[in-house]
Image (cartoon, rainbow, N blue to C red):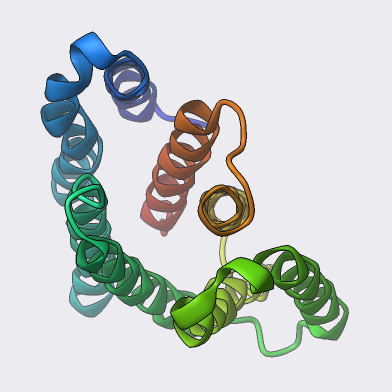
Length: 222
C-alpha cells in the first residue's frame, strides 16, 4: 500500500513522534518539546509540498492550509498553561483546519453513496461524548458544540468519498479522519470531564497518524 518514499518518510515521522511523546512526558526534557512538537507537522508539510505537484492547484492549496492551521493549533496549545486564550486560539486553528478538510472531502464526494446510517452513528457518538463533557464546559459550551459538529462532519465527508476515489486513497483518508476524531475526543474528555491516563501518548499518537494517513491518502490521486 505504501510507496518507497512513504515508507522512508514514515520512519522519520515515527522517530519525530517518539521524540514528541518523550519530551512531553518527562519534565527534564520538557523544554525540547517546543521543538519536537512542531517538527511533526513541519516535516509533513515539507513532504506534502515535495510530493504534491500532480494535484490540482486549488486542492493542493486547501490541503496545505489545513496543515498550516494544524501547525498553528499545535503551537498555540503548547502555551495553554500561560493563558486560556491560547486554548481558544488552538481550538479556532484546528476548527479552521477541519473545515478545509471538509471542503476537500466534499469535492470528492460520491453522490450515489447513502450516508444516513453513518450520519446516525456520528450523531450518536457525538451525543454520548457530549453527555460526559456537558457539566465541565461552562463558557466553552457553544464553541465545543460547534467544534464537535465540524469534526463529525469531517468524518462523515471522508466516509462519503467511497467509490469516488481510488481504494487506497479512501481507506487512508477515512482512517485518518476517524483517528482525528478519536484524538480530539480524548483531549476533550481529559480537559472537560476528568484527567485520563497516558494522554500524552494517546492524543499525539492518534493525532499524528491521523494527519499522516490523510496526507498519504490525498496524495494518491493517480
